[in-house]
Image (cartoon, rainbow, N blue to C red; front, side, top):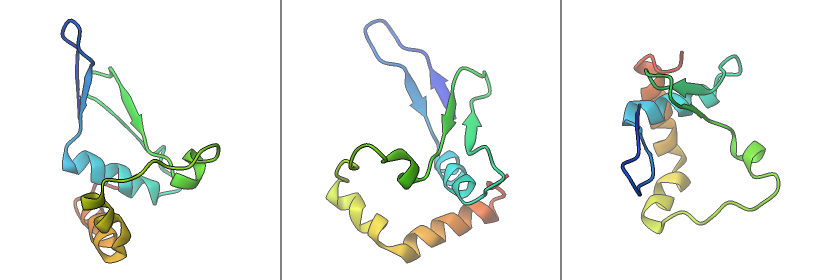
Length: 91
């Protein structure tokens, strides 16, 4: 994960790798985890929260159709979760 400071007139960028994303997904499954990753410069922290905890006051936005098929595919999601665990990303 990398926090990229903004250039003049631009927004800052939070660059997440596939491994970072899989780590956050794995952390959601671990009740003892703080479910957070922090960049090496300690400029920003990213916290993962379950959908039901996040969407208590509003409905989730629409997911782009090309990505929605993957979310709907439980086997795909389980394979990604297992990859994160296998890579040691759960801790």
